[in-house]
Image 1 (tube, rainbow, N blue to C red):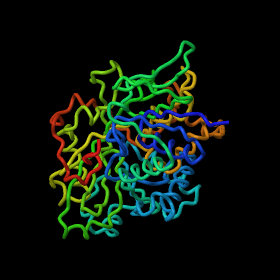
Image 2: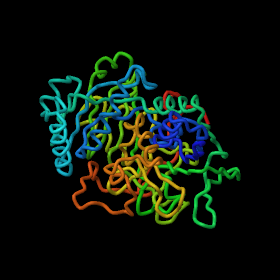
Image 3: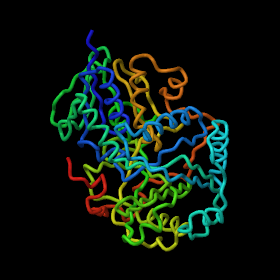
Image 4: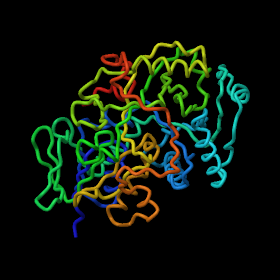
Amino acid sequence: MALPSVLIVGGGVFGTSTAYHLSTRGYTRVTILDRFDAPSKDSAACDLNKVVRADYPNPLYTKLGTEAMAVWKDPSSIFAGLYRETGWVMSAHSMTKGWLESARQTAEKAKREGVRYLSAAELKERWPALTGDFPDWTNLWSPAAGWVPSGQALLRMADAARKNGVRYIFGDAGYVKRLVYDSTGTCQGAVTADGTTHRADIVIVASGANTATLIDAKQEVVAQCSVICVMKLEPDEIPKYRNIPIIDDFEQGIIFPPDENGLIKLCSCRCLTNYQNKQLPGASLLHSVGDYPFDGCPKEIEDEMRSFVREMIPELADRPFISTKLCWDGMAGDLNFRICPYPKAKNLYVATIGSNHGFKFLPVIGKYVADMLEGKLGKEWLDLWKWKYGKVPEDHQDPHPWPLRDISSLQGWKGRHAPGEGKLPWTWSRL
């Protein structure tokens, strides 16, 4: 019997990984719809780089991260050569010390070697390029972590899926405006901006920060933005900073080591919402690069990022940004993904809501989505990723608890985006 046809709305991490893994299981009629060709500019993964690690308070994500890490490191995988193991410093202040200690205890139980606290003096001794004072920082070092050029990785997996027969439709022909149902409430497909109706036996919503525009998900997902800022080193500066670790201050931001072009990425950990959008009252939604290609870092975030850098590497604190980006993801209140049947319709599934930590699982997450579709997913994963109607456990710990601000309340971000010399995934010229 022929396997069912599958329509996936969204070509980011979850959609791409799902398509790829379905194609390896013999599914021959898999289609991805997205406004942009791979790597989709609206995907949170369309970025210079992302952290890859297995440090979590929840042992299930530690297990999943360890599984993904094996693929990132595998020289025979489609991702060969992309992973850079630099180690990862997690840093906390008053709001996040509990999360940090939970992550340390989980690492200890999982027998992950080398995970330990480092003082500011130890940081500076180990990495002399870190010349700041690190005021009031608590630092947890994890050596078995690193980064991946995420835009490149997403493109590699999309190309591999295409080779396996997955069909990509983009532009107006792939820009989904609404889903289509029959009289029994069964989802049959999607209508795109060019008026085409695409039908399939199975429909999967993998639309991240735009999920609430397609299904009733206001309670379940909030679009949040982590602002990206990129600075460039001079060629003679690159050796000095090449070996610094990733530093992730959960209450301020993340700094990455320079890539091969001398580009250093900063990412704000103080997330923004977008409730003042023109599409859906009462919901925070994606502020799409397709509609607003030149919008970038607000002035308030820039000031905060420069303060963050000044505490670590003061000589770089006033370096100009060559490009900035508003990087949006769908956030669940409990920070878990949603990989489950959509409870309000038949034949409709969700595989999305990366909650700002989904990218690292790109190599493997689609396998779990495929298992869910085939009724093979273990109960522990079904419980973790089920639809929760906005409910959050009382003991939930948020690693990024800085109070949310709406982007409409900030200044200086409209029309600010710089081109970045074509070396950044969101400036690549593909549609």
